[in-house]
Length: 170
Image (cartoon, rainbow, N blue to C red; front, side, top):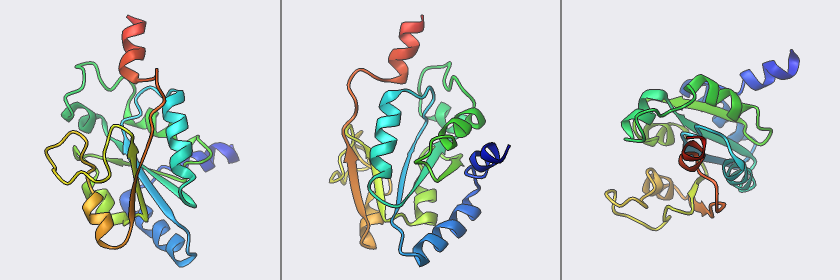
């Protein structure tokens, strides 16, 4: 059970994430943050998360809660998996250091609490977009840049999406 406990201990509250983040900062470790629904984990997700993790020493994943996913106007049957299930799968990935479930429609509060050194999103976003109404705008980008952090995007792996997997299953 020791390994499973290690996985479970990666799923934390915002307060515990702040404490761990402060400890990592004292050790001069670069903290990377990304977020998403990660409803049905697929090779595109794994590739993206591994590349995000390689941008620093520690990777924190902000995971949309079930209510948060529904607020994003995805298909009516989304999420397929509960946030507890999704968090467990995320935490099982060796390159993910922490998973924090958030309730809001965006991770803005979480980003402000954790102050990551690097904020990462997929290639369908634009690190230089400043219009919050644009679909390519990265929530928290301006805040992260304001204290010297960096914002990066990672190319998506073609042929993989949760929506496409759901359609194929139909």
